Length: 286
Picture 1 (cartoon, rainbow, N blue to C red):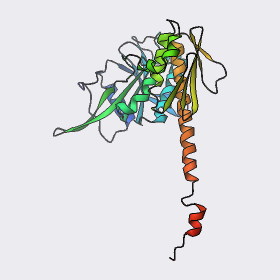
Picture 2 (picture 1 turned 30 degrees about the vertical axis):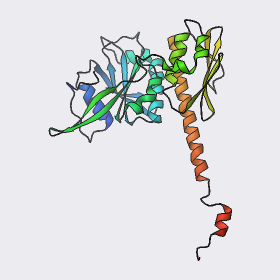
Picture 3 (picture 1 turned 135 degrees about the horizontal axis):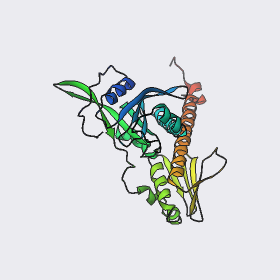
Picture 4 (picture 1 turned 180 degrees about the vertical axis):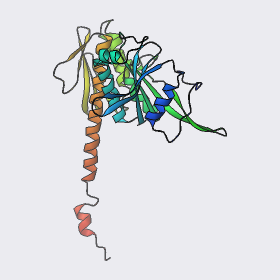
């Protein structure tokens, strides 16, 4: 499925829901993926509109959202965890000749209101397991229709620009651990422009509005990751461990973002429009 070609895609009625559009578009073929199931329940309150086997044989759950907001990002992380935890059961349930059970399941996200800027935070997740698509409307004299187009996530194929933010910390890591550290630093950078990086040669912290999101510690060249609320530090010694840590960082970030937004709203709601002195001096008859 290319980012610039719509060949083979069916048109989508503007009145269709995103989930219905996803079902029709992927069911039409032309994506290099085969639909093997639909309407898969994920927990109590979420469903994957379509279940695919992609061109590589990877089981893929397709989520449909109207907008790429915090709720959609958290749902993506939860679905990735769900799919990986229950991979064997899902592969057995959605059996297909080309399905490769040895590959971790992927999650594709589709939204009618999607853009590169809105999809930026999805770059914090595993690029091998997450893809983001937009329903793009095209209008001309021939009519108006929607098409699926992929949004390239910034973390793919780029040098680790985030390494410049923590050079002393990364330099202390072993040659095996340094690529993992660079990946984590770069991917966390995509979460929010307000994420602050506090780095030393032995410790790296990320904070949002002075609230600690996560930290890394260098111990004899290896990486230990910590997240508030999680009792034990995590040894990050392989790709899978780094991905698990990043998923937990995204969940922690969303929780802090929601908490700080609620606190700010309550503070604004509790502010008087006029001070006591201004109220005392106010005389509507003058």
